[in-house]
Amino acid sequence: MGEMTLQVPIDTPKQVQKGCDAMKDAPTIPADLKAYFRPVWMVLKNKTQFSINPDGTYFYSGCLHGESSNTSAYNVSGFGARNSWGGTTGGARFKIKLDQNNEVVFVIGFSNPYVGYYGAHIEESWDIKKNGYAKVAENGNNIESIHTYKGTSSSGAPLKFRLRLSIVSGQTMTITVVQEVWEEE
Image (cartoon, rainbow, N blue to C red; front, side, top):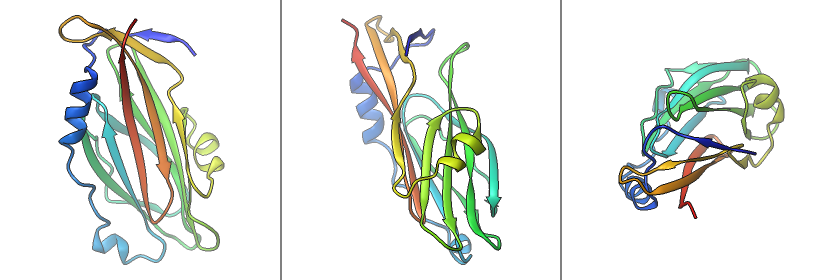
């Protein structure tokens, strides 16, 4: 839609690649969560220079298993949800604070119902129920951030970036946020 100027240095494409190359492997579903009937394990891959922070959940059925925590830059984390009588269905909201004045808020929806298919959805929004859970689709989806962000590298080179967000459904759902950086022309 529009461009937003950031007041923090932006990682160069090489720095982003180096950070992504150093990322650890995704955590596997814990045995105590796997023991439940219809669990969901969510792996969050943060391929950005920013921290991704949980900011609320909604459950149609089921509940969180353990706690979801901040996922620091170029890192991977996992969190789980477990079933109730209807399986495990709901959503969660996350915030990515880009600088003092700018943030990206996105929601996910997930579904591992008692009857039906695994489903997932991701969208840039505040409304977990309406734009996360209610839009769950069998294969998940991917999106691009609404805005393009611009600023400079730590050495003063003008840069721009967009965020690409995706979610893949399954008992282990993979949420990936990628910082796609290029030099400003």
